[in-house]
Image 1 (tube, rainbow, N blue to C red):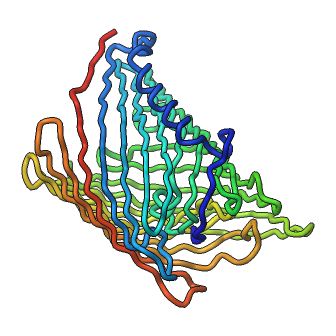
Image 2 (image 1 turned 45 degrees about the horizontal axis):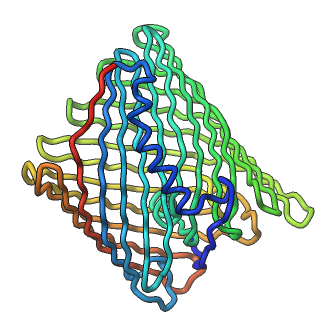
Image 3 (image 1 turned 135 degrees about the vertical axis):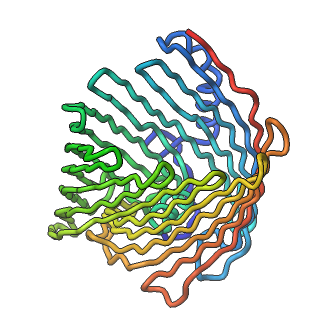
Amino acid sequence: MTVSARVPLASTGWGRGWRSKRVATVVLSLMTIAPTVVPMSHAAEWSLSPSLGVKGVYDSNLLLTPLPHDDTYGYWVTPAMELSSNTERLEMNSRIAADFVGYYGGEDRQFTNVFVPLSIRYRTEKDLLGFSGGFTRDNTLLSELQATGVVLQFAQRNQWTFHPTWTRRLTEKLSFQSGVQFSDTTYESGRLVDYRLFGGLGGFLYELSERDRVHVIGSYLGFRTTDSPSAVRANFPGIDISVTHTFSESLTGTVHGGPRFLHSSSEFFGATFTTHDTVWLVGTSVNKNFERASVHVSFERELVPSGFGLIIQTNRAQAAGSYDISETLACSLNVVGVMTSGKTEVAVGGVFPDRNYVSVAPKLSWKFLEWWRAEVSYMYRWRDIETQADSASSHATTFMVTYYPPKWTFFH
């Protein structure tokens, strides 16, 4: 979120992350042994799609600080491997990737990101079993800033997520849905707070017609800090009602909302402070597809965890669009605006100030050869914090070239 500091990488354990060499070794090993694992599964078809991207970066204010600063230059090298498997009943997908990053100038540091997601769907005549989760190692300036509008210090985040689901079709129009959620998040910084999330949901999906669907979901989510001297615990059960309407084959809209009953307790210097609050969460989204373009507009009010050791409320609006200029040339635009406020006490003490964040990111993509793609992008970012006299902004440009060799397909 807002602290600028040099962060030494931890030397051992998943809890505080891997060294870059260990991360690179593990990721490259997974990519190497993936083809040998394929015959062990019972899938009818497996496919592997490797890629390698190289990106140059310039940012006028990487940490979004109002204090004097220098420009930052950097590079990214991103090897990746997409894996997928399909049968009549089973679908499995993953994209194993790594980012080897170096920054120079205003920020002089190197780090490695790792992404090992997994998605599974298994169908029977009446049931759909699903799983999504995996391991993510990324940087807070790249992930949490764009999602929540809150800038953590320049630190690496390690996150495990597990989300199994089960859907049971009761009638032709009525289905029962349930799921379990668990995540464990750690930071490679003593100034940020590790935390865990756990909970579940259950409810019903009813298809009113071919164009209308209604979801009624009850949920419970618990939050607890795991390494703070001032323990913070919070839970927020709630109900959410969602209505989706298909206006046409190319236009779909969704609106949802419901209350969350937030209860939190914080321990500071031997004293316990508790709060109770009812928060109404709402959201809406519209998706429109054209012959050569697509548009997405959404607004979400959510309760999300933060590395400050508390629950924050975000009001996030997004507008995104893409257009295929030709078969080889495409452009896109993504605009995000977030208003953020704290809903529980900060685990390390103090008050969480309200803040605003805006980003505007146009991009141009060109497939100049059969297996090669080039991308040029620009991003403007602006941030304002209630307790700071001045706001901060940055201008960033990137140029990226990606090589996509032919996909490998295996049958079993």
